[in-house]
Image (cartoon, rainbow, N blue to C red; front, top):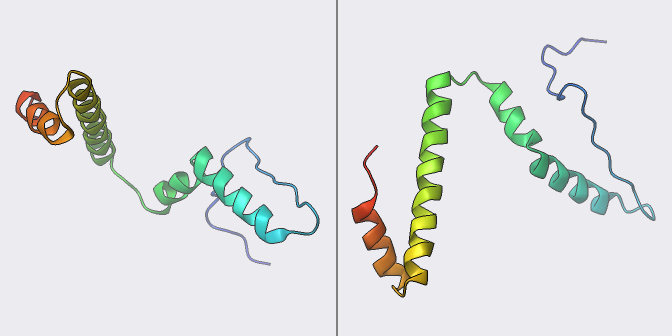
Length: 97
């Protein structure tokens, strides 16, 4: 029996699904959804390869900029602009990195 070099399981957390009526396919789908929602898959990818802190911060900042842009577009749409006009206006008003 060989020992595993990497431990991918989050500490202190367990995940389970119940198999109803012997339907394993449905249980596997449910488990996949739970893992995705819980961020386990993202954690697997993060542990697979080392990601430097600067790259993590850069990607988080880029995601935050995207969320802010999306909120700005929605706000402009509520003011009466079309989606394309709102996007153009939001691009003009957003601050550079």
